[in-house]
Length: 286
Image (tube, rainbow, N blue to C red; front, side, top):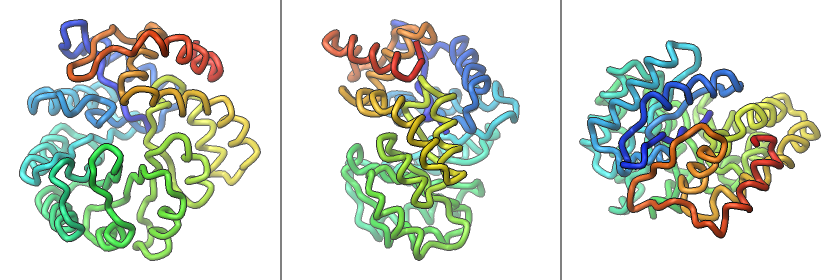
């Protein structure tokens, strides 16, 4: 499942023509689901109308060929509800809801936040824990508690802690989906019982990442390792500067995107250009 970058022109406006082509690129290259308007999609700098329009556009372009999981999380519960309702109205298959960032809620605050969204909008919802970006860590006990709530179907766990995956799996409700949000540890996460990954690297190496995921889900460690070795450089180097700075540069280098990115994000430093080219070459992306 690919956490989609959002193509932008040099003036920062969303390039919907390129976005249409980008959806087709992923469908042609074995991506299993598309995740627009998340962190990698620069959701923090999309205004409300743009956020909803990007989701609607991707849903319309996909035409039901793969699931669309819309990023609709916010640090305000009322705004999260509004964005989640917008995604439902657009026809998204599910929503991905990052923990409220910056305001640092308690674990009880997280429970009440997600319960409120689940009660307000009847669409499948995936929790998203990425404390390195949000300064808020949803503990395993909280994820387990929320796994019992109607409409909450899984969690994207991006701490990179395989023990966290195993702890949640031990006590969550049956069928609750554990999804990796950390590309570098995704292989081990899936081999430990995770059901997939919402990936940044998949933006630029979708077919290879899909092959690695399928090997993991089939329990074939050797085959998964062979694919993962080719992905290792990208999994590491796509974070030499804050996501999505490196991945957007890579997409431009591959001829898929114009060069636009919105402040306060800036284009990738030239010091990393050769590093990123070598990582793309190792994965067969260029």
